[in-house]
Length: 548
Image 1 (cartoon, one colour):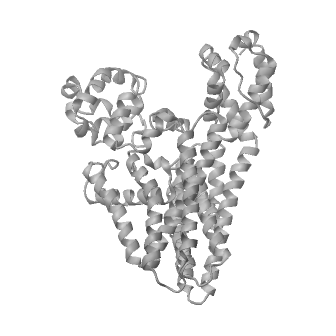
Image 2: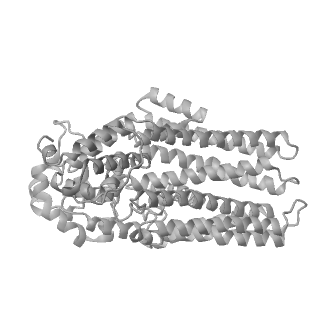
Image 3: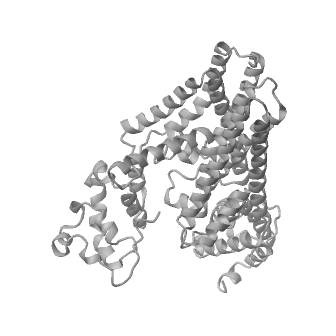
């Protein structure tokens, strides 16, 4: 820094303004490094404050800030240590500043509280209304089941620290877990030693549980009750809209967090990175994600409710066909068991449970980070989007023709509702897909399987990314048979001696044991057996290749 400041005196003004940690309106500076002034530096420093508010991690904010300003890119090339220095400053500002964190925490707490209040209110209304007591009991069971599964997830996350588990369990019961998750992610907290997941992964798990066991079935149930009620009350409509809005915001925030995470973008650049870097385009993309998810949830839950009102068996047939076609596609493309490094019946049960859960979450919430080839896949995501739009009109037509109950909605009210939501869906979809980075459009309709995608990812990694390559082989052992030795063996043969000398942390007994014998250099197999050189029980080194 002593060497730098005399050469770039305007940096004093930039660092001083950043250290004040005030939220101010700034902008990009389109000047060369040599032409920068103190005024330009202050404008730059003001600009990063708003970027920090809209980013999930400090490093993501700094990357966006540098991308928007050519002078900072030049500075980074001249002094590579400046980027990590700016990241540390952004981390400090995020931790000590309160506005961005307050917005995130308040938003999460407000939405979760309103949703909880409306759900409890509708449960009480159902229980106190003659003929609707069954809806109330089902709704109460859904809320209770969600709480139990979330408490279990909190136990898995904090089983080694009971005090942390009890704190999380209390927050779950009181309805403040979304706010706590927002605080942990927004403040940039890392995974602690006793925890199984990062804060972002933990938040995603809890949101998924809430969506599968409460938000989605409760929304369908409330719409069914509304359709069958002789009087369509405003409070029931408001509760349905609040649930859809909460799901929409939750889905959009989760998508945003996963895509803007520097960790994800760094290790998986061909998938993560569709959200634009500039502030206005990023805000437009995020808002369109919220409205698209909101309208998608309304269309799909409305369609399911209409089919259930006509004949509940119709709804079951629709869901069975949707899930069945998805399973059939995964089996035909040999993509059903990609993620499990185990054998036997547990593997089959785990695959079915995982695929079913991910399919339900994706279909009803539009968490589009699940379009990953390892999960639902791009083509299934595209079909889900189109199904929500055209399926709603098909369900409305069937309801109009086949339902003859006394509380039947008029065709004008029914199709006006469907068309209104569909228009919002279309506007949101067009805005979203026009705002994202164009190279990522193909990820929304790609037919890539887990195997083909990970092969492309493996080949795209540079010579400095051996860790990332090793993780693909650890997490997806089926690639040895599906890719063949021509893809993997040259990389192993070329680098084995280097790994023996450097002994990177991932290059240990566990990883070597996972390699087929023919992939290990011949001299190593002959001299030392398969893993003799890597036995480290006396050294106490930790085997970490199973961590994810």
